[in-house]
Length: 444
Image 1 (cartoon, rainbow, N blue to C red):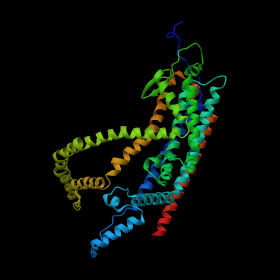
Image 2: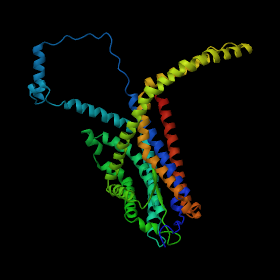
Image 3: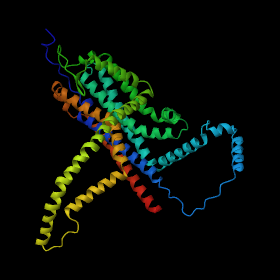
Image 4: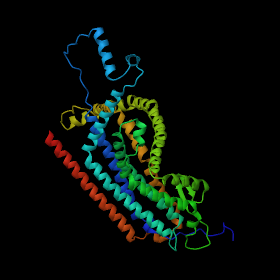
């Protein structure tokens, strides 16, 4: 019998792995991790910006007379001798300004310490949420490994879903870990590149859960992609034609050679401790370049196309319509009801709204132009993994038995654990907000 004449393989359902309860628990906690990251970023920015008030020039300050030339030279020579520096080298500027760099680094470290202290409650909630996410992630991967080693085996379809869901959990844990790690690294003195990749005892200790989850996920990924045919044989009837597809921007069969090679390379890097975290950081910077270029094109189109078109429409159509049609109608209605003519007419209200929008962007132009692309870049892999999981399930749903939709104990446990974690997080969150407001009122 030829391969094309064989019926398509029917995959036995496994709701404990790909059921709606497990997926919902993963997605909800991933969204909560994103919310936590955005809120902490907002708190950090507000804490830093609150300290940067403009310094007004002092008025009526008498200018001191300049010292004599000989006195200035003597003072300069004395300072160089105390620092053991040649005055000629100092005069030519051939030595680095280490005191200024050290002072700037000390100031930056003080700002970081203040940010961490003022937002300590939110960092504590972040750690608790990370443990809950990775706990469910470990349970899903270990269940898949045990199922793959059982007599019935694990289908390629469920293995792909497990890898995608595990990637969502891994990325959520990384989002929660990344900001606190960057703040810890900011306390270290030295070049920026060294501080970015410097590994301390505290940094490594805080990264252990995320590293272990990434290693277990990568180990299962290597086990699956090294021999996909082993998983394709887990079907209801044999012989049959495998029909398991994985959505990678387009549906791709799991036996595709290019997909297999790329996946093996990715999981081979992810299984190395700490290198997996650097890989996720590299993905962020790659997205920065890609989405940053797209944002630059969109901003250029906004400035060169949209704004002139909107300006032309406003002066040619919108303003005359408001001025000569809407305003007279509102005036006639007020007179017919024997009411006073409104002090602000619709055209004036619309113009004031446009001016308020312009003033906001003129004052906070960095908010939409910088923060929005950053949010898109950081969350792009997470959003992609969720979309890929759902579309993979949608593509293969006709080849999976109806038992996939059954509600099981495993789904109940996963969803209940996620809801408990969400409840505890929101309770701590609102308690921290209330505590912050009360302390602010006391200081005022």
